[in-house]
Image 1 (cartoon, rainbow, N blue to C red):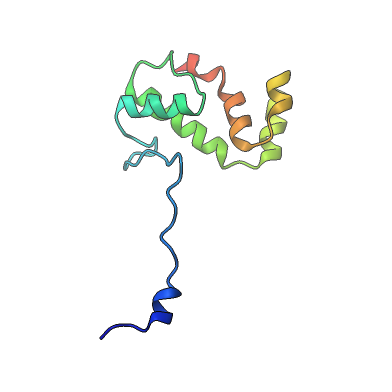
Image 2 (cartoon, helix red, strand yellow):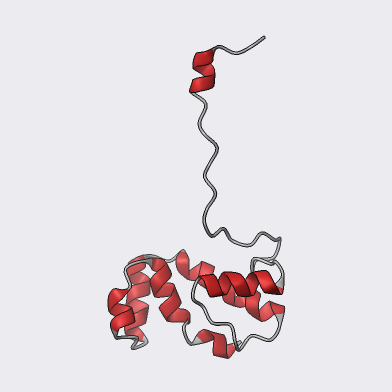
Length: 110
C-alpha cells in the first residue's frame, strides 16, 4: 500500500553534510590517512610542520577537537593567561578562532 501524500510531505529532509566533518575512524585522534589529517589541520589553519609520526597528527587533531568543546569564555581566558594578545586575539569571536590561537605554537611540540 502506498502512504498518503500528507505523510510523505511531513518527512524531515535528510541532514545537511557538515562542511568540515571530523575524520572518521575508531581512533580518538580521528584517524584517516596522514594526507587527510594534514589537509584537515591545514583547512583549520593549524600548522603541523613539527609533526613526524601519524600519531603526532592525530594528537594535534584531537587537541583541536577538545578545545572546540570548551566554552568560549574559557578559551578566551586561557588566551589571556598565556599572554596571547594582538590583532588575531582581538578578532577572535568563535571557539574555532580561539582554539587556533591556543594551538598556534603547539605543532612545534609534536
